[in-house]
Image 1 (spheres, rainbow, N blue to C red):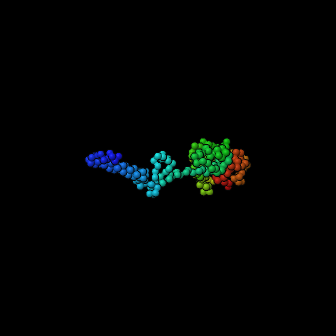
Image 2: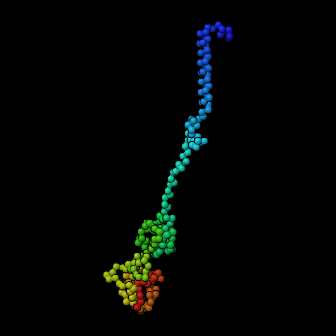
Image 3: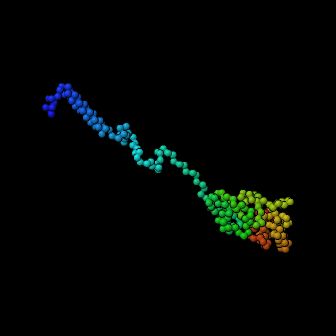
Length: 237
């Protein structure tokens, strides 16, 4: 190698040295760049985003979680629940009158069924069986031939609301005297038709004056319940 160098001219030696130095510079540049790239880390770390920097690292390779909700998302407002039940009073011509609890979407027919059903004397056509119930409602099932009674001072508000005398040419003044009332006046009493009115007059003619209102129990067709319905409208003098 030294012998070859000695044979070269100064010009050739200068050119060879230039090539050698250029090669060294190229090798050094390549080595320096490779060292910097190996210590640079990931693109997120190079940008200063990482767990150690206080920022959340998001893994974009994983699918988003559909169940995860934003931290500031508002909670849904629960709708107001409807009333749990309707408490109603069923009275009149039913098998088991009383207070019952039913679902809030129930109807009058459901309340009557809950009370054991209507009796054979009930006048269901006088009611709207499809009427929706509301809490605190009273359902009165009238008997056949029963008419609303007139409003009396001693009656409760609920009874007065369904009370009215039978229409007559001249409405009698209640209470009427059983010993002097004629058929027209007797028929104005709730629950008393022409047949019962005539029986009351016949009893009076046969047995004499009524001594008390309770004597009406002796008239055929008048029982304890009917007597209680008549009691506010009659008297004995």
